[in-house]
Length: 416
Image (cartoon, rainbow, N blue to C red; front, side, top):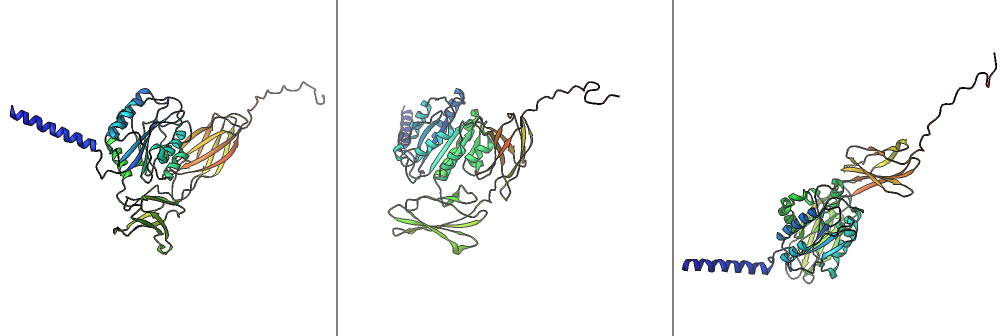
């Protein structure tokens, strides 16, 4: 019996050590950051899909280092009105977050994602909700692809504030819209997956989230034709020194711009830059406590993104008309276009997708004798959009003409 007793004691000891390790939470090297799950809880999602997505989020959380001094998580529902299932400050372990996700109930209602994004922005930067200043912010939006209100502007506000946006679509989303909404590059931050295959991306997505939370060195993101955002690991503290950030065109190093930042800063956004230009960046830590080497990076801004020009309305019929435009010029080619149109005096707007390489489309199902506002928008790889609008009118319906009978003999003329 002694060998079995010894084996039982060894197994009990290993289990106790593993349990104590789990209670200690994530290791000291774990990244710090705030992760917000934006979950489509509206009536456009079936109960089955909602349960599968909830299961997926639980599996994802199991692979993330959540806990004090590491990642904090919050969950916000997308519905008619946004609702926070739990704030960042409520749960201090991954197991508690998993339990809270499993207990989340579907709200139904409309899919007002834009409203939820505005609410998410408040949560990500509100200390009252447990958000921490100076740490990386990541938003993971899980959606079936549709929204009842505009998503682009509030999502761009989040990205301009330095939030890294990941999107998981269960397959019915618009590629152009979601590519523009996700952080760049879209191939790393946007996933189209069937709801029954979400487990396939769990490992890759969790690694990408951790990577976004823990920059190992100076790096650039959200690169556009006029700027980019920088992030770096915490090399100093607020009490140990400060940073000097230098930026200069590679071809004109003497025209450097400098920005002094406090020692607890981990990011900065440069704006107002020239398109299609190489810039040299230097991050210089200044400290009297210890010597920290500068970090250097070269970033190239994207080519200028020019929108469509000269909208032409032709082939106007009572219930249709053709819209043409000069395609977006410049080195940055558009990923595609969407044409939105609606009556000037009010009414539902409609939208038509036009692939890249085409510069015209026919709008169908219009009302006779009606003035329309037509907007052509070009979408670019950077996530930006450029638009141009024009007014178009459909003619009145053609009345059927009754043929006039011939005049009687001798009427209106001379006799023989």
